[in-house]
Length: 447
Ligand code: HEM
Image (cartoon, rainbow, N blue to C red; front, side, top):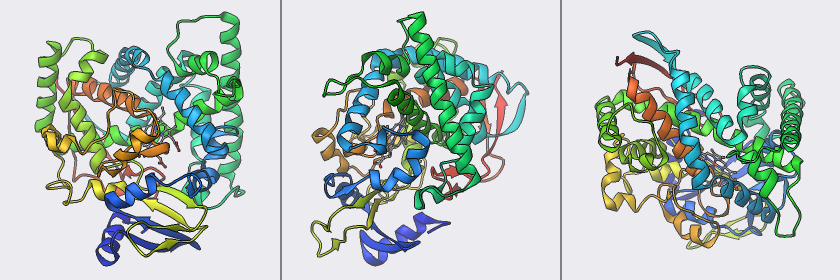
């Protein structure tokens, strides 16, 4: 389980079917696999099982009080709607040139004819630059090279599997995490204060939206403290997920280099040339780029399992099993996404599989339309492809992630192709977000 969870789940699925239990450090973990297992967990009622009790010890010290898993689910739903509305098509449109510019600046350091880079380290830096510029605003972006980078690093140190299992362990990294949380929180509060004094209105970042537009159904306005912690949560939720996805995308492309030329051809067909600026509308038409990201997420979903804690005895529909109160349930969408039952030659990286309408029906990532919450999404939990989850805890960052990832990939492939020095790296399952192990890539400049 610790070193090769995919093998572990597949072997036990073959032996016991889609539902089985294992014990992890005294905790009973009921695993629910394939589309029926995903659907069961993602549609579970709030009174039956909850995410808060499963994720609190890991996330509350990092995100802070009053947000996400520190509040009642109904409040989380409202907070997610605030962010979702802030990530409007109009704002996403404004982000594309920002991401393109950040990416161009970043890759200008790859100035040799060819060289080998740790692609995960490179993408982590680029993702934090682009995400902070778009979502948190120019003030945060401008501090990234100085104090903010260290604060982020210490805060991120709190995201360790051990903190998922035990609350408030007196580890040195947790002390640094707590100090870093306060520093980042206060840093955001200071920016909000100085923005109010300067009274500039035409900003497209989420900080601006949260601090000016958001009000709960009760009539209460979002406090600055809540806004600061929501921004911390957004930064952390998108950072490793998008860094690992962009790294895997480039690794897969290097393994199948014929796609580099196909991606460039697609840009020439849609935009006229490889020099034309990328735009939000053009991105929508770059379907192969879309399919490269989608296929990467199918094969390397950053979040391996989604977890809930059972609040009362819970029967599993269609079986004789009853999950006892206090147990944890998890689904593992990667298992259905990499199953031959749902995808032909499931382990093969083949972005073109998504050109076929029948396969498109298997996706639920309607990332350019409003996907709302609640009932609309419930039905979609039956999909075998759920890299962004489904139901009430579904990701709100999907549209932003696609815009960010597509813009980055489109900008990079204009000037580079990549070669794998060896085989495709293995997955590192010891981190909270599945990452590539020793992900070295050789870039080759095209000009
Ligand atoms: C929830 C994946 C990017 C914010 C989720 C969930 C998944 C996921 C699977 C469901 C968790 C569960 O049901 O337990 C991803 C992937 C990303 C990504 C694969 C990028 C490739 C982002 C970004 C943001 C974000 C960029 C912020 C802008 C959130 C939030 C939740 C969430 C706020 C809701 C948590 C909840 O309701 O419990 N994400 N995410 N994510 N994600 Fe993302």
